[in-house]
Image 1 (cartoon, rainbow, N blue to C red):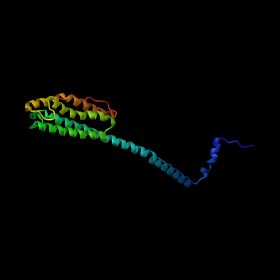
Image 2: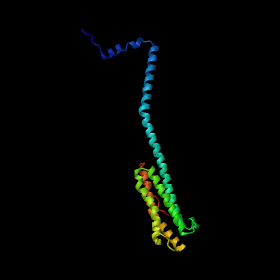
Image 3: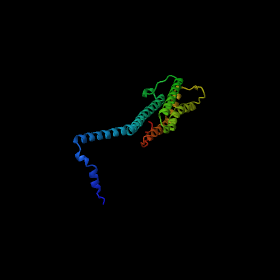
Image 4: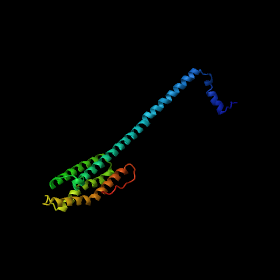
Amino acid sequence: MSETITVCESICRDFSWIWFADPKVLQAGMTLFAAAVASCTALYIAQRVYPKQKEVDRKNEISKDRRLRYYEICAEFKALDSRLVSLGRDPRLGGTPWQSIEEVFREIGDVRREADALFLRLLLVGGAGVEVPGARVQSYFYEFPKQLKAKLRIDGEIADISRSDFELHLSSIVSETAEMWRSSLNDLVNAMRAEYGEPPIELSAPE
């Protein structure tokens, strides 16, 4: 007749050697087991966890760097616009002094070329969502001289016009294109903010 034993009795029999084992041997075994667990854990972290965390850190660093570049680009676009606005402002009120109409158009041309280079930088560092609003900002720097020449009826050459009349036209263009500038920059800023899940904002109207 076979002997019937319980599960508990079976476990006790299987591990009964522990009660009679040398404590030093047990301690060495436990130390070895702990070392093996630690090694396996470290290996898992090195092969699975660390690469993933490193990739997350890399993406966060790229995101942080892009945000900084976005800020710099918007600030430089704003500085270029200020140069155009300053041309139409009385030098006694902080405007840029100029000696001739040709000098004004040279400055406008310089600003436009710098805007082109800035837009290229935006395309190189920015996401797909900023391309269209960035192009609108760039187009503003083309529209400004286009509208000014239209007022002066210039077609290839600068017309014979008095300085005072030119100043009036220039000041008028600054006012008429101000909303175009504000709205285009506003769209660009919000496209940048959208990349980071931030809500849109409304830039204040130009003074």
